[in-house]
Image (cartoon, rainbow, N blue to C red; front, side, top):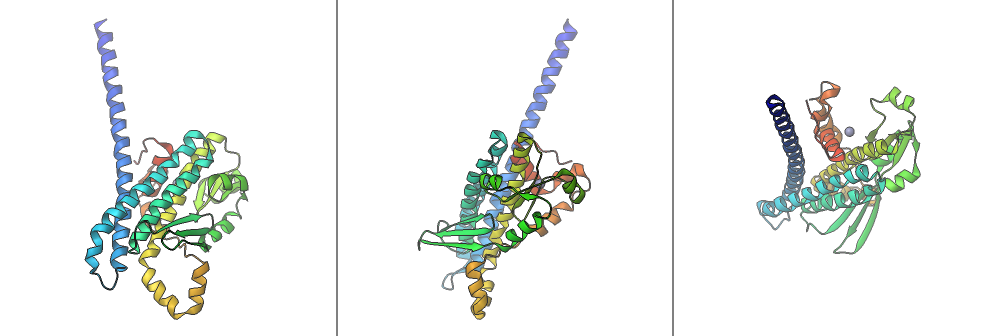
Length: 298
Ligand SMILES: [Zn+2]
């Protein structure tokens, strides 16, 4: 009897210890993601505010404000990505809308500060193949075409069929493909390219919503990198002021360059096997936030 009690106690101790370890790990992973988003926002906002400082102010005076406002923007972009978890939890693609709206609020803050403007100056939303922007101080609304996102849609159309209903529900262009065709050309039946999402057309609802939330987070990561445009604002303005046609084009076209691609590929150098997939930060973040559980990096 004594042996049984000792064994039960050992079992309880080990399982509670494992649970505590697992819980601590989840907190660590979540903290890592929060801090990465904060650092990303603070760094982009600060570099941008230095580059775009007004001629009559010292560049270093922009730093303290840019640091905390950029960091705050990073917290909001994190919350947007975190909201994508509800898609999986509630098995409802409609949660993609609050995820995108919240994320865009954080991204707008970072971009505004990087342009050395008030963080609340304008709200910028990368939606489908457009960039929508509303300026609160001038009350001006601007809609521009995002050519890379449009190109992504054309690319995806080669492998799947556009699902209009899911695209409207999920605030993202959604394509669905046949298993054999997708596996013939790609390592997975679910993936993201230039803000469009490819899904396996026969996925059951809970699997569908799970992978959708993961891929939506990739779409939000893609738009995170749009703030790089704020760093290039001065040279782009200088060139477009010299070429009238370019200036006219940029009135209607937003340069949604796939800046993330290079950083993603560098991150992927750490991946030497399928097991190590989540060593890539972008995959780790998407999986951690969409699954709401611990991710093994190996
Ligand atoms: Zn992924």
